[in-house]
Figure (spheres, rainbow, N blue to C red):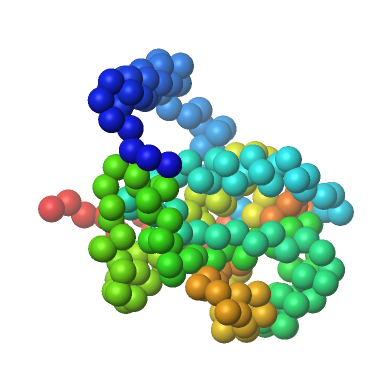
Length: 221
């Protein structure tokens, strides 16, 4: 992909600006029920219906997730959808015992990972300026950038899944080292966290746990 220039660039910018204005005219805010679905009343789930998630839904889920912003459009997150019994058995090697059944019963478990060499794709993702020198030969900076933005994309992923009518249950009770050895050996990918998703069995839910009030954790400067 090459950077747009001249009249083509001006036309693309004008179209993008008009698209945002048109969206704001159609809908300025989400209604309360929509906010409840994606965050306020959403829950982490631990039990699942025996109901598959279609490939079409997975593609749609990725497309929505990919639209979320990352710094310099780095897009470092990588998503591995574990659906087969063979894949789940491999993933189970990394899990704490109490999490194995949750993962095995979920229709899909996503490994949310990030690519430490995301920056090699910047000529495509950020074509109007070569930003590779910001990262080349700087592994610590690359790792921090990949982890931060990959985590952001993992959050977008969970919200997008809920927006599509799916339920999610993120997990951190596992060994990243085992996942990386089992799924990413010989690559530049590193795992971040796991996320079970599908259509939940609400019978396993308990009451929602407390959250801090505004004054406890928010301040002004």
